[in-house]
Image (cartoon, rainbow, N blue to C red; front, side, top):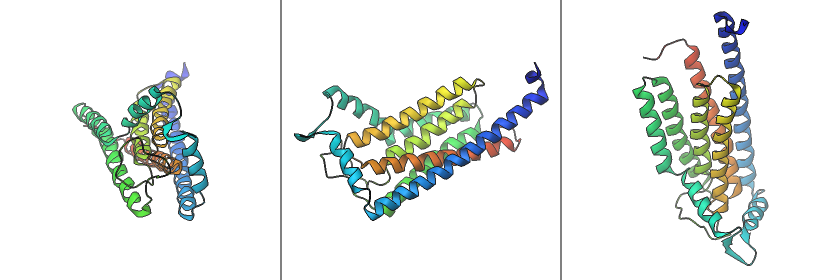
Length: 236
């Protein structure tokens, strides 16, 4: 098979990497554009009706303390939202970075740590800048203390799970395997963000903005990883 020839294989790998870089650049640009648009709409108050309608649709019309669905759904959503909490994400990132360092994969460790830490600082800085309070339209089903926009759970889940998914996918040759890994990374990210709206601790636009910016941030760090790999320097 021609594809098994070293030169052809290397050319295919370069082409795949360049297509991946183009896709990442597109995701980053679209994510930043969507975030800016949502932030503008939120700042002008144009998203208020949309936000209220979604929050109210997720509660019983007779009692806003009661979310729609049976009791086990609320318990399951609480478990899902914990996957995007600081403690779980810190343990996850620390474990992955430690493993990568033990394997002498310091470039990959740098990408995971850099994307995660910078994502936290960016999320907190934007919360302070926009200063949006948490929803009071419906009772909050879990305790929160920080500001609302953008959703830290949605943004950091996108940053961390998508970064880890992309990193793991790089070690698989088959397209179906890479697609499945990224599908689960996206699915977890969506579920975590949606759980914040269901629990009444975020406006829907907080979560949409968090997803958009988180995906953009993960894509930008993927580009950093691609450039490091392309530099040709071997990991120690």
